[in-house]
Image 1 (cartoon, one colour):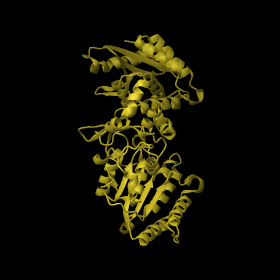
Image 2 (cartoon, rainbow, N blue to C red):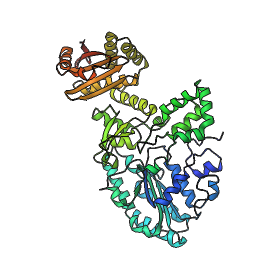
Image 3 (cartoon, rainbow, N blue to C red):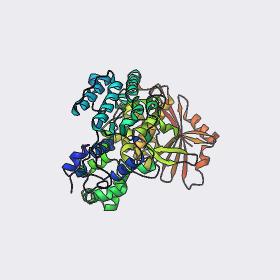
Length: 507
């Protein structure tokens, strides 16, 4: 078996060391034939940097690195001058974005025995492109990876993010006017900022993000998983004492599910490589970067039910730094993906897989309670529902609330109680819907377990009877009749002074 390229993003190193490489050069060949100015948005650790590195070696003319790959004999191998920037590694935090860009441009110029005389980053960028073209007589290839890192790193500080955006806007302003000197331009990132800001300077880019032909240019398809990891799938089945088919189902459940065209479902490369290194199911991708800022945004708006969210296509196109919409950011960052397209051309977003769902729920729980998930409480919650034991259920809920620090306990917000219960039930593995819409009203929650349906209505500083009467008066149970399930109407009242459930009733 070839060694795995864990943490390795340089194509040349992977090929020289004979590490495993999933051949994506057929997509690159199509890309080179189709467009010269391109943008691709994908989540972190999804293969963007490796794709950029592969493009760099192609335009350096290093045909020997592509022996046996699709593109080996499909193109002319000509060494072009290259401007390659990885904005996540230029040191903008330490020396400032302007100085960091200036330093990188001058370093590239020096590597071609050139000196830059112009002032300002845009002036130096324009001068570098023109001088590279003049020196070689060839079009310049510009490869910029993680272009938005200097902005997304400061999203919590809106003013800094906006100032970073203005610097980048000035930097990219010369690209369109320098087209006569440019052979190929490729930009990657997580986010696509609104066209009235940064992308107004790059409105000629071909956005590959949702292009069906390039849906699998990053990430692993099920076919690629079988082709390149077949021997490791067998080994993983043995290590986990599972039949091969069951092992594949588990791998799919944990790491597959990402989609940008509603059809192609992709595995996360980072998670897959780490899984086949350890043969242990774990949260590899999510734990490599905690979404602290996103979780804060969600908590601020009491947004905790992220499954089956229907949004218009416009939600994907962009977002503004000063008006961040969490749903768009969740999708672009990889915490949600496209599940399906509706007849009305809207899109349904959901967690891509078990890895992301479990981890996000744990982070939400930690954010709402400032406590880590408690396996004992989870086990009691499962036992209470399985045994239809409401005394144990209420006892467990009150134990959960009692552990929440007073300083963060939002006593007078009913939504706070809802959110914690919803997340706790989800972590316990139950199917629960929050704020369920019906023609006659909105249910607080519906919990389904085997042949039982629990319709839950919550009240704050009122009574369980008032909650129960609302369920009955609005006939919330009607939608669940004729399903051959037992229906239980449950009224629950939270006491804000005592921070507990002080009254509950089943009808």
